[in-house]
Image (cartoon, rainbow, N blue to C red; front, side, top):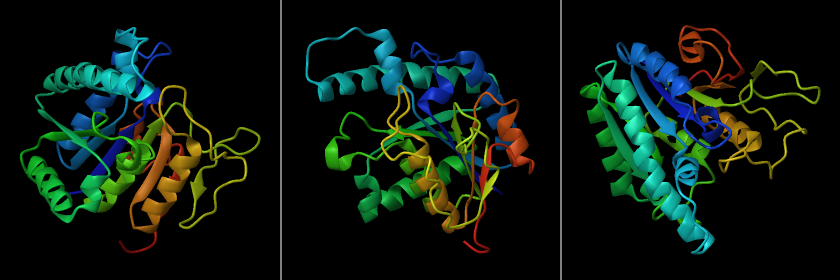
Length: 250
């Protein structure tokens, strides 16, 4: 069976006000369900903090505490939406919250890998996010792109699809660059400090993750979540967005 990782960024699944775009997410979960019928697929999702911000108006507490509160409240809403949408396709989902330490500690790493493989056998869709409750400073991922890359390596994914709110990696004129070879350098027009409006990541980090994962043997795509049937088209071999080709062997 093929194994896919789909990373859905904050801006890929939320509206301008930070609320979850349920209509868009319904389309993506329908595509995931079709792929899950024959192959293993794992979702890395953002959106918990943004979702929490749209629900709560909190001015007291320090910034770290506010983020924790937004995350733990927003995560409940986020997972309830995923669960509801996948139930329509008669699929169960599993929530997996991790920190960077889980990839540095051998026992944690093997336990996580074993759990994912067991969920695949039961045809359950793992939905993973950073555990913002405890992920502070050194325990934090750079963003969920980094998490998606680490998971792709862990389970030897055939493809990693990074969904965002732009059509792919753009050149200086704003045109999509359709393909990068393994080991490609970062284009000069991508800025290291760039961030998305609600999330932590930007295209620079997505590019770095994509080239790193492609070097490890996993084909990577960066594409727009609003592109029609984006996951099915990529899965069926169409070059949607920007493709990062792999070395011949994993």
